[in-house]
Length: 401
Image 1 (cartoon, helix red, strand yellow):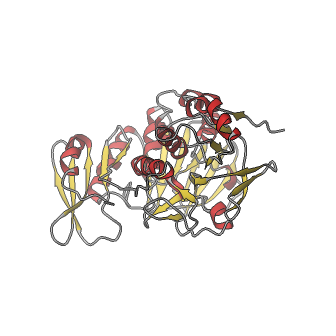
Image 2 (tube, one colour):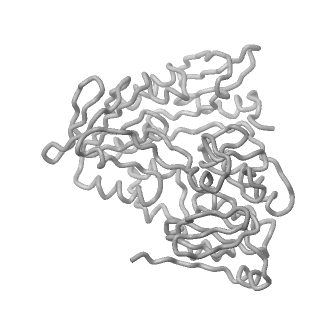
Image 3 (cartoon, helix red, strand yellow):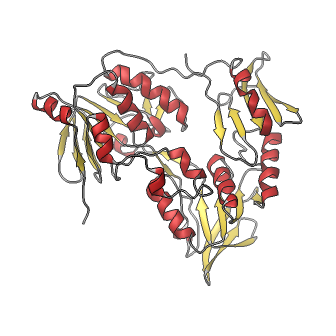
């Protein structure tokens, strides 16, 4: 039996009694809760309803990949439960509730419990889900991913009594988990198709420095390789790579990327591409439905990072409060949480002509991505050179103005 929590704010109930249709936010992750906080700064009276399929606890998702070495449990990462958030936001928060169907023309939501929720405006903050690779073998279903608090609690539980962890994916999340796991005393092997870690974000020289730093702590690398099958072998897992090399592991963690959750929007007839397509006002193809966060494709951009989310939430909050405000994206460097070799990267716009120019300094690598007119369009900094972030940020043009 599933138990559902309905947490309500007092003023919200009073407003509902006046027949004001609510703002409804689907999702209580960082995007949903940040938007709710920002919107409440502008509107304290209209009802707010939030719907989530989990327990509605507030936590910072970026902390999931560096919590092990700090000995933090899932409960430690949750800083407020749904009841506390409902009081703070003057909201009705429906937890353990799935949205079964949207009816855009009628402006209502149908939940899996048969409940119908009418809305004034609807915001989809439904996030993204881990990409699941198609793997052969009788243990392929034992691969874990960490994308939320429940996943993290499950991951910690499965780590109990284990030692040897194989991480699929040498990207941002894979490298952060590798650093965290090795710092907590585990043996770590990272497998991935790229020649260097963070190969899609960093120039080769910066990736090599990160690779060497993690290697010095004991991380083993199997790059330009992918996992083809995972089978049970006694109490371990037998992991076969595409080059027929076989590795043993106690646990396999997949960190090969995320895919925006677009199914709900697509079934409702909204336009989707890589994400739920929205304009600069964060409005979908339906004038009363908006989207933000990891699920949204904003003006052609899918940016699953914290700073774009924060900027989007502030703009959308004003729009929902009656002050139409297009989202702007300033320079927003991505900070990679790898203490073995700190990394900051401002990726150049996708498919932009130009070249990386590398400067090896004693403190670390300073890499500049220069366009065809020799203009600075991106940068990557490693180790002690990350201190130059604020200087280079002033030279890079904003992404959306």
